[in-house]
Length: 183
Image 1: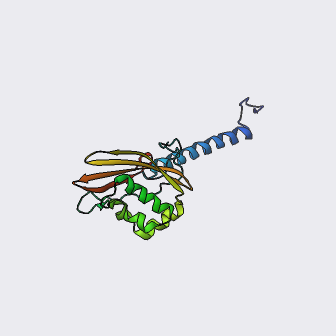
Image 2 (image 1 turned 45 degrees about the horizontal axis):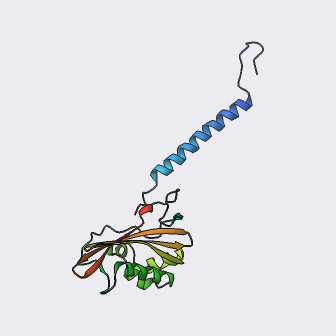
Image 3 (image 1 turned 90 degrees about the vertical axis):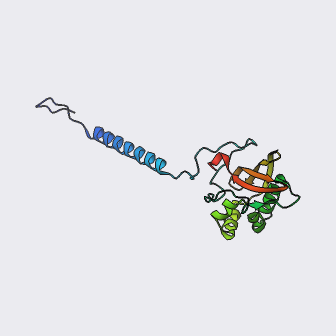
């Protein structure tokens, strides 16, 4: 479109609309970037990590963030006498499958117990609906153990890493983390 007297080409309504749409698109991208940058570290990630079973962990993190509690044998959760770390982890997941949240809560490491009370834990795990689990790997030494297990829930499969410390004949639960989910 041009002005017949001056010969100057003027932007038509279509070019103005395109320019405004471009500005809006740039602003939307900026807002999305700001939101993503400001997300807390514990927020679920869009890309689900691969578990040891070849499945992916999807959805939210199925545990409360651990409280800042240092591991101390004096206060740590003890594994029952005669029970191996692998059997301890199996007992935890067996309890979840049976909706026995009181038993499962008692088997947690101290930092997880400090992060939420038993009622909150039970409510949260009831929502997750643990249907089954597998023990993926068990590495046991004279002084410690690492047990990897995958729980199948309504929201997907989640792989947990349990660590244990041995002192004499007593095993202690050191931690339970979700390695692919930032802890």
